[in-house]
Image 1: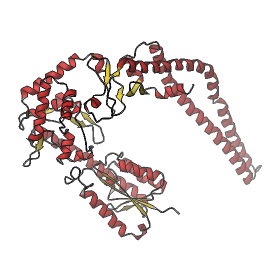
Image 2: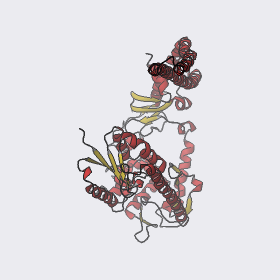
Image 3: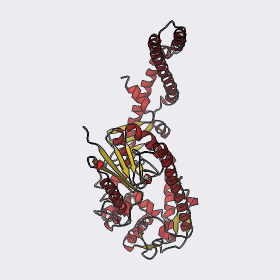
Length: 522
């Protein structure tokens, strides 16, 4: 007999301040306290002594969403029927969306025979009072959800007030600054990193690109912002960063565009669309700016001059290059960039980081785009052939989806059921004969109705597919004889082109399902 399994689920939405970078301490005290509480609970119930105990812990994940890594793993084990009991500190540790929690507690867990215990809420799905448990759980989690929304609203109000007062409210100070020991909402210069910031601005004003600046910093073995934070054990968020990181153009340009280096506080550059929404950028005009809140690292004049270089740079770019770009480095996942002569594509990250595994040579753009176009046009021709064959089989397929015969059969059997009942009522059939005949008719009806539903689903799928195929057919007729892979053509059909080297690429199409069907013809 399989040994029963008990899962302890532990969650904390924000790590404690005492967990440092690269620390051997992997979890917060609150996580430890939750674990102690759950094990103390187990000691009080001998029935759990024979259970195999596993732990799932999400440290630093909000309970408002259910895509937490360890939670997802736990639910997968539940669906595989490898977990018999789940124990949490309280409902809020499991999650804060009371509607979704209700689905788990009222539907999934009872269906799979999983016992659920919330220690501090004194809830055990195996104990009595099940008729009122659902209402109690829903009410408790409604309170938790309301608490999350109310807390989110209060935090927004506080952050707005702090932003307008010029106070710093983020977890980590920007590279080049530290949070003041006397007032954590005030920035002070970190001279060691500030030297690098000034050098970045100086190099930019001397005419160097972000790519070249990143190369110089890496050649000088200057730690990147993430590496610098790791080395100085600053900022909790950097614990998840690899132990060795490098400068790249994106980091350089982010520093060059950050107005906070002039001594002005710029806040609320991003916002959360509701407590369950995505973190999205805010329009630059809506940022909150307060001048002269801290010591400047670069002068306002130098900052403005640097911003002017970006304007000149953008104006010098052909408009077509700033549009859709599907070509991606297969090794680091970054978009490929154009070389100075606009004739080749290169991976900027691989170019500026000698240790990167990225392909170092430039890719001839015409060769890459030509290969994609050749593949695309091959699919076009295969689709045209498929349409010709399809027109010959459409009539036969339509006949298969005809339901008139089944509907007549169902109507006939319904009448037979009525006749059978009348015979039983009049005494012409015994009870046993009536039940046997009725069951036979019901089986036929179930079969006919099942086939009818299957045809209905096939018809809906066919109609949905026809709509997509019709759109694809229109696009094929429009682009079938294209001679170059234009940006319009690329954006219409190509999702991504992974480039391994000048001769090996992997294409992901936007009409992938259509292309797979076409390739299956061969």
